[in-house]
Length: 126
Image (cartoon, rainbow, N blue to C red; front, side, top):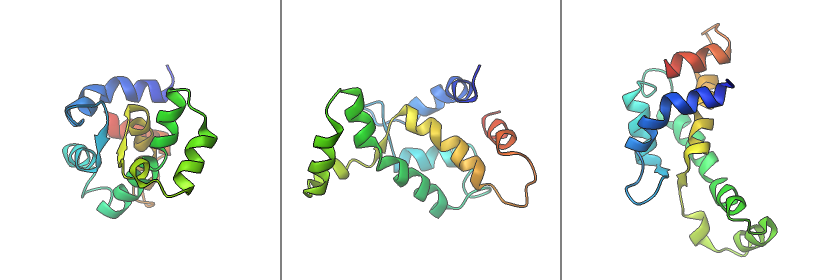
């Protein structure tokens, strides 16, 4: 089983408990709530770093969600460049992007921690 599939299986129930009610996406409040529940914040990672991780991935969400819908990415990029703020205001991430946050958080755990990043990921999901 690959690592991301393992993470998904372990965290899926927790992810959906923090999702927005009308979608299967999570916003910054749900993400921070998850991070507090798992003691990532404030014990391991600062709020600023968590926000940086979340908003970095949220900026990709329009492209990822468009790809799922088989819409031309070039059209979306040109829409974003033209200043269509509606697509950029969607500060949410889906389950796939959420799963990506876990290794990113593990990589941010204190540099003094000598464990390998994969060990840190497994620590976070166990």
